[in-house]
Length: 124
Image (cartoon, rainbow, N blue to C red):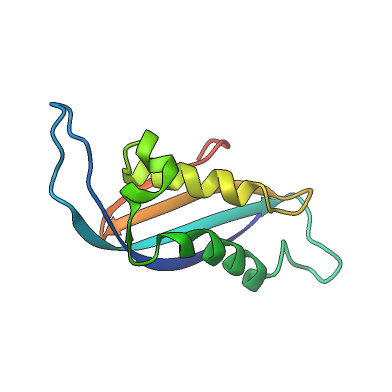
């Protein structure tokens, strides 16, 4: 199995719903999102896919987050904007644009150094 990874970053704020029903204060993060794509084989030029194409797709998805409150995005009105749910949201969007024969292994979202969540359908 061959795997490639790309990263991008964005600035966004969020306000989490806490277990007691209260909300934490709105706060900003410099988020880092990464995507991991695999294939059993390489294409005609010896790659899984072009890094720049994958990065462009990831950038397009995360660009809707730039400099806004994630709580204003419809998906996060229904789902707490946790790192876990952000990773799942990006994964689901990215999965729709991948070429046939490629597997999106996972999407990882880091809200600050050392604090990240990962979502994937293939065992990690």
